[in-house]
Length: 245
Image (cartoon, rainbow, N blue to C red; front, top):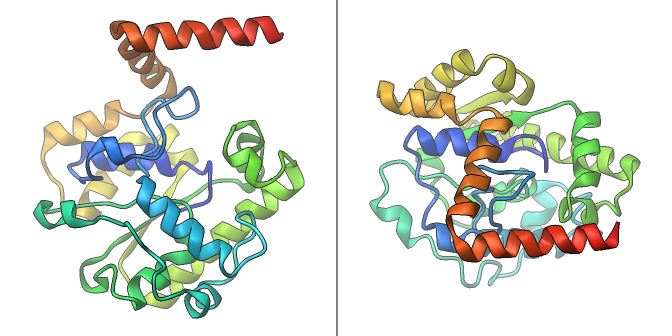
């Protein structure tokens, strides 16, 4: 967990390379793009449930209420359509959504997730850097009206909500600095692998390779160019952007 644009997607990509299952890709909310060429890893049904929880107790997605307030306001049918059946056959599964910073308590208290086998990976990043990235992102920017001040407040609020969960619930937690993940990937990934219980060296190698936006962008666009439909869609988007310029 961590604020929007804090590095949770890259961290999820690393965890996936370490053998953590995020479920069937066809249920992911967002496709990989130039902002997150390695993918977003957040599930459509989970995002919808978390959005419902936050909107039911908060003025906006940007500034969610505290976890206990959200729990108290949650309706009995707060997660209609959420399918976690795929987790039953996964020795290690993960759920990623920045909104968990505010909603995880509800998932635990309402019995949707088993606290006894849960681990938290918390991602931290400089709030000002998060704000700059947020206002440039098509979806996240809309949460904060593409305003740097609101974006920074959003980042600090989500980070505080995540810190509350870590300090209050007593669940094993591992903190990742996005800056350190980029600058010292080998050290950070080795510690993360120990935390999730993975020692396979081939998986660690793949996890290290997943860090680095230039490499990920090359894989992203190579995949698009290898698929005629995706290549055509990319060319059409580029042409539209050029015509608008």
